[in-house]
Length: 316
Image (cartoon, rainbow, N blue to C red; front, side):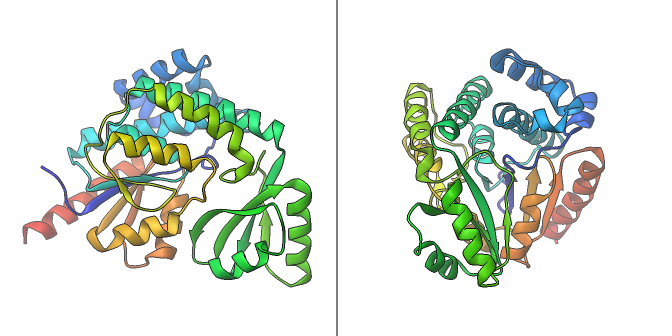
């Protein structure tokens, strides 16, 4: 049975913390198998980094992306087992989009681990080739931030996360000048502790290598729509899955548009994965949308109570 009014979303790099996924790992054999599968493919012990860190290692791109993906997919399998619901859509923020397409069965788990591992490597290599950084601009609209970025060559909007939260990226020197302009003009900003200018043209070399890998992968049609980062529109066909993932790495993450696209047809969104970053963004974009996260046993029990209410309301 398709649950027409429930969606699932997956966080990306930046949501990691030491201990993530541990409770599900301890309580579900299928989660242990997911971690074991990923560890064999990526070449390091995912469980060890997730549960023991240290956070400095867990935050490294090549480790972080694989670990967050593993936890996201583990949360999805727990959701699937406990609720037996097919969501009406999925979406993921940046790296989280790979989780969304995997849960929609566009990729096998094994192929997804291969692709995420290579994506992380290519992105790290791109940051060495084209060093960059990012800064969040707060309290300004997209158009206002765009006007500021137009003052600089080499500054790009990389994430449209929600009202008053726009992230821009570029070379380190250019971003430094951009921040100085913001400070001089009392524009609130938060420099981000990242290793590169993700979702900008500075990732072009990573995009080219990743495109070759995507073309080699066996990609299937999605079993339910996945809303793409690059345009906020639903994807079902395998050919479109390939296209949007190739675009994603150098395109702005259109998270605001994604949530605005789905909010009319959904009355509950579950965030599956570490922390509650996306839940907070969704409430800012669409305050009327009900949101809950599932990442450990306590949040799972809360989700069960929520699901009972949803089911009860639909039966009335």
